[in-house]
Image (cartoon, rainbow, N blue to C red; front, top):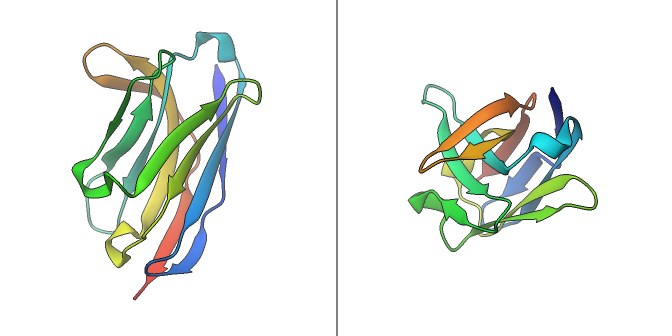
Length: 119
């Protein structure tokens, strides 16, 4: 089992920045890939970004050039740096861990953290 705890969400004005953190505990040796999904009200959950243990990353088109995912293996923590935030980035952001086999399969999920971007 892997436990994931997110932090860093909040309210920010459009154009601002936030950094989300996700600390992993438990069977961390089993973690290959970590990522972030988000879900806005009335919308389906969407993949934002993921990062494999080998350093491969992928981003949603809507966040490319604005968001950066990174990982500190010593701290068992993954980060999502979000710059140039837009109102449409408002959502609950979920950290997850899993593996990549052509597509990203998320096995474990955090409880989510709210990000609200005001216009």
